[in-house]
Every structure is written in C-alpha cells, then in structure tokens.
Amino acid sequence: MQQPKIQPPSVDDLKAMFQVSGLKQKLIFTFLMMIVFRFCTQLPLFGINNEVFANIAAGNNIVGFLDMFSGGALGNVSIIALGIGPYITSSIVMQLLAVVIPQLEKLQKEEGEAGRRKIAQYTRVFTVVIAIFQALVFVLFLMHSATAAIMPNVNHFLFVVGSVGILTAGAVFTMWLAELMTERGIGNGASMIIFWGILSRIPVYVKSTAKIVMNDVRLQWGLIALLIIFFATMILIVIMHEAARKIIIVNPRRQVGNKVYGGMNTYIPFKLNPGGVMPIIFAIAILMFPTTILSLVGQTNFPEGMLKDIMLQLNAVFNPSTISYNVIYFLLIVLLTFFYASIIPNMQPKEIANNLKKYGSSIPGIKPGRPTAEALDRILSRVTLLGALGLGVVALIPSFASTVTNITTLQGLGATSLIIMVGVALDFINQVKTQLLSKNYESFLKDKP
Image (cartoon, rainbow, N blue to C red):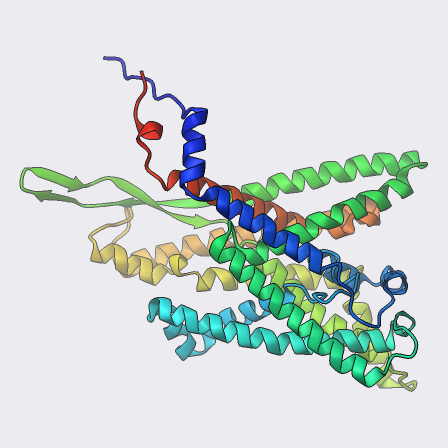
C-alpha cells in the first residue's frame, strides 16, 4: 500500500502560523530596539570633536577593533561608546566565578529560576563596576592621547566626571536594551547588538577597500583571493557550529499491560565547538587588557633603563601584528574552549553516566557506571581538542590572509566577526523555526491528498 504524500504547508498555513505564534510582534520589537540603539550611537559625548578623534583613532588598532563591536559608537564618541562590552565581560566573569565559588554554583544549579535571577542581578551590578573602570580608562585615553579632540575651554575635571557618569549610564542602558530584546524579541539581545554593530561597519570597510584596489590590478586579484578565503572560512564556521559527535544510547524496553514502551535507540550529541564564539571573545578580552594598560603606561616618559626595556619588549609581544601575539591568541582559544566544555551541564561525563545507569540505558559495548564515564570523558576530550584546534586555526586564517594579500582594510572583518555573524544568524534562524513550529497546527501537520 502506497503511503500518502505529505504536502508542504501552503502559503496561507505559514501566514497563519506567523500571525498566531507572535513572531511578527517579536521581529518588529527587535527591529525597533535596534533602531533605538543605532540612534544612540549618533548622540555625541559633550566636549568632543568627533572628526578630530576619528583621525586620531584611524591608526589605533585597539580603538578600531572596539569600534567594530560597538557599531561605530566608540568612533563617534557617543553616549553609548562602551557598547555591550561591560555586560559581556561581566557575564563571562560570573560564569568563571560560578565554577570557583560554591555558593554561586549552588544558585546556578540547584535553586532554579530564583537562583538564576540572583545571578543576573549580580551580573548587572558587576556590569556597572566594569563600565566605570572602562569609562575611566577611555576618558584618560582621551585626555592623554587624543587631547586635540577635546574642545577648548572645557573644564577637565568636569569633563572627566561627567563623561565617566554618562558613559557608565550608556553601558547600563545598552545592557537594558539587550535584556529587553532577549525577553521580548528574537535571539540573544547582546549577540544581536554585536551582530548589527559589525554589520553597520561593512559599508565603511567596502568603501576603504575600493579606494586602494581601484587602480591596482595586483590588489584586485588579491581582493578576489581574500574574499574566496573569507567565504571558505564562513563555510568552515557553519560546519564547526553544526558538527557534533553522536554517541548511540540503547534504552531498555518496559512493558505496561499489553503495551511495550521504550527500546528505541537515541544518541547524545557532543558538539565540536561547545563554546561557540565565547572562547574567541574571552581570549580577545584577556589580550586587550594588557594591551590597553601598556598603551596607557606607554604615554608616560620612562627614563632609559631596565624598566623602559621591559615595557618595549611587552609592547612587542602584545602587538597584534606579531607572531607572538597570534601564538598566545591561539593557545588562549584552545584553553578556553576546554574550559567552556568543562562547565556546560550537558557535557559532564560523570553526570551523564549516572543518569544513564539510573534509567537503565547504556552505550553499546561499555559497562554502565564508571566505565561509561571514562569512555565519555575520552570521547569528549578528543572531540573538544579537535574543535579547539579547528577554532584556533579558523580564528587566525583571515588575519594571515589579509597580511599575505596586502589588503588590511578588511581586517575588521576577521574571524571573530565572521564567527559572531554566522553564529548569531544561525541562532536567529533556529529561533524563528522554533517559534513557527511551536504551534501544533492541524493544517500544517496533517497529510494532504
């Protein structure tokens, strides 16, 4: 007997799902919040000449990199120049502390929604502390390295106090927007803000690249090669984002009356890249700290001697264009990938083994209990190592490609940006699918003749 064909949903079915699931309202809300964010990036900080600062910041790699993630807010010296950075840093630090401090770990794992709300509150408070520190560092940078950008007749004391207060308030406002988007919109609010920030800088990169390759045939071929490498990198990122090692699980059969339940084989997916883009973001945050401090300290006129020699050597080590910086960057990504794999709840070998033993399930050919935990630990270590090395290589490919092709205007669209953009786009698509499929419509699921 021939099985009836399952017809795809009609346009009317999809429209009905789109309306009833509330997806339209969430998409509109997300879009409106992004308009608010983009509007705030154009509101300048009082006492700053934006054009002069743009010229000063043009040759500063640190400012250029941070400006990309703030969507141009830092380059415009806007009231939200710090962007979402303090909130992300605070979230990362809280994740680390939850592993080290038992009380926070208990809040996260045992106290459910109430515990998560407390951790979220701690994250907000710590965001304010980080924002004050970063605002102070940025204002000191303006005072020492970008003095020409500060308008004349501005009281320096009031400028420092007022700017730190406004920048901190801007960071808190950005955090509020991100949480609001996460709660009422589609996707993770912080990731969406970074995504649109990177996207908004693409026209700038395209314009500057077009200028340098317009009259040079060799650079035009280099640009083609660079774009091919970028496209191949994006494919690798998608593969790494979706790839998983599936461990087959045999479930026992249970008979209740005349019916038999269970007995179907399932699997446990161990993702190749469990930490997503977080290892890269955290690695950059770690490297940016000494780079920023050295940049500020370098403005001090040290006398000739051992201290000055040490400062020069450290500046050389943490220069983003050096091999030493890239080696440290690669090693940090590998280590942080292992760290994130170790704190993800569904990637704990002992807990998985205990749960399998509790429900009578097992891995074919492996005894339940400790042998299962050891086998899962070996598998997880190999998968994570492969993913960590792959993520480290992918993170370095675009930078090396830009150096080889001599087209440095697209370095802002490096691996970090590509991974974030691809990851956020995939997450956004998956959430849209989830919203559409969450409503069980008869017209969508039933077989049609």
